[in-house]
Image (cartoon, rainbow, N blue to C red; front, side):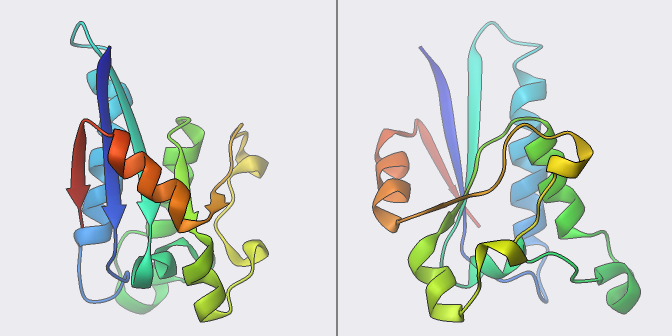
Length: 133
């Protein structure tokens, strides 16, 4: 057995550090595993306005002089942390999968998964801990 932590991001990437904090904490999961005797599995899911965090080319450094959420997402993917995005919310905003952050060109073996909310709900139900941002 181990710990299964789901980071549920519901807020947009604007005017708040919460989404970026969720990504930073989720990235700590694989690192924590090195120092304790228990498996720590982290997953990040974006729902509602939170799906806006997954758009590539937002240029946060150019406009606001803050670290890019896009780079945080790439780091998660490069660390094999699963990232899920709610299909229904992407459709609501008219966002296609090709507009989402990708890290395969950097060597990531996984990509952002576009899934129906029912799959995210299943992850919520099976998680040991749920962290909402």
